[in-house]
Length: 117
Image (tube, rainbow, N blue to C red; front, side, top):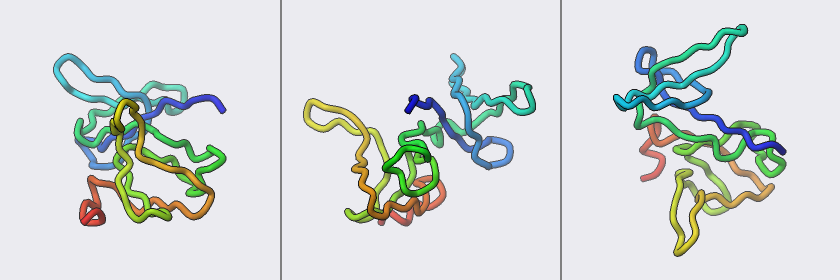
């Protein structure tokens, strides 16, 4: 499987999720760029909502049928938790153990923070 590099962020105009490539300007503005009908488009996004694709929907052990991004809240055999980048002792990575038994995306930290309480 080829590695996909994709980001999402909430639009500053509409509040909807935008998916594509991330550009951060020197002025600290964050934009997501994507192609639609052979035209390049861009939308300013709220920097705090930007998250990178962690597990694509077509990965063999992703049984959710959806892309999993940083900031998603998943429910699995180990309870509910946020997908985030962490440092473990002298290693680093995402706090996600994939198995084929019933992982579900139940929300995200931006729209459903109460799910982590």
